[in-house]
Length: 422
Image (tube, one colour):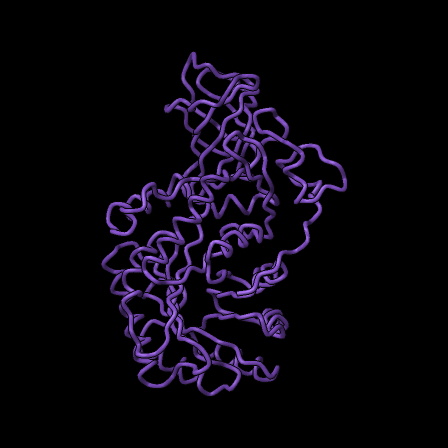
């Protein structure tokens, strides 16, 4: 996969979580500004990624995938940051997974040349975006279909454009999200794809994350492998490249690797897994998933330490209006709250030496747009102006609140910035 770096962009003067900088400053110049969180060189609240932990997570996941001889196409919707996409690709990722045509365009404009769009491509304007990108022979693209109607729309549009669009048929469980529910629907979609010279059936795609129980997930994955074997045996798969079977969100990638890596269809096959949250990880829903993986999976058990939380949001104590309550200058506009409120992790008083662990009994009880309510103990040593670092659950919905996320080293020095394109 080719990947070219785009020129450094001007640092966004309207972005939050930044310090003072000259008008000519670009994202590539940030390290030279010598900002440090503990010196209060940047405005809080600020979202940060810790470089050392992020590097560890990149290497850990790539080693895990290689142990199963499968490909990694991390879901880019987690960060929507081309700077982080590049790190993932440079560490061995097969490509980047995305969810919408505008996301694909943003990734392409920053050098990504292989994309799996794990979503249906619907609508003329969205199809036109992809058709323009496919004018570049170096660009490889796949999307998913789960209806004969969508296959017909795609077939006509891309056929009229004189292009061939590789597609994967999506399977879905009853009561789940998208995806064909049974063999009859699968057959109908495959038949429709075969009618159109503008389409090429590349394989099967699933999203197992809508299921919650391992037995049900394994049964669903085996349905997918059986479906791909059937398509291969019937001669339905494209002849111009390897077949693809793809699955795996961030919670069950180990189970998907175990099931899909055993598949043999008698012809070239690429198994492509799509976890996205591993890069930043978290202390909530994905830490819980990682604990299960580390306990059960034989490959993960050998790879200690496991994934590490690399994303935090730092904020000031803004007010101490009454005993037992601190108001934090961080709210729903700054951090995810859908899968658990942020957790106080570090406490730093400007002018002291180093941050220390936040008291274990401190916890957020509620968040508003720009404020968080934190329960503290009577007599706790806390002051207005103290800085608190919060761990996050569900990083996807924290990244989308920041145009620029700062990268910091173990001394809290700012080493760079990752722009986002939500």
